[in-house]
Amino acid sequence: AEYMGGARLLCARCHCRGPTLGCHAPSCRRTYHFPCALFDTQCELVQSSWSLLCPRHKSGKRQCIEA
Image (cartoon, rainbow, N blue to C red):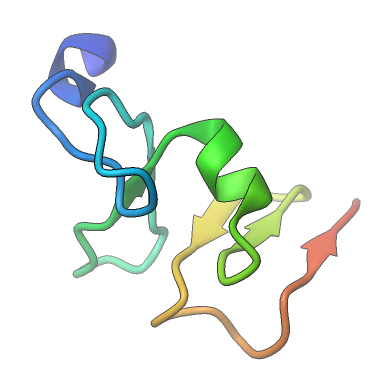
């Protein structure tokens, strides 16, 4: 079901269909492919909670926080 939903969405970085990661901020609709989020220096990936924050909602500098 999630995969089919992702097929309609566009990635905020590469603008291609099929992103499966969304910004963790409740009102944000930005979505990313995992590789796009990983290599986007503006996104914040939080490994301890497996969440993503887009550039608008990240808490500061890019960080990849490990548990």
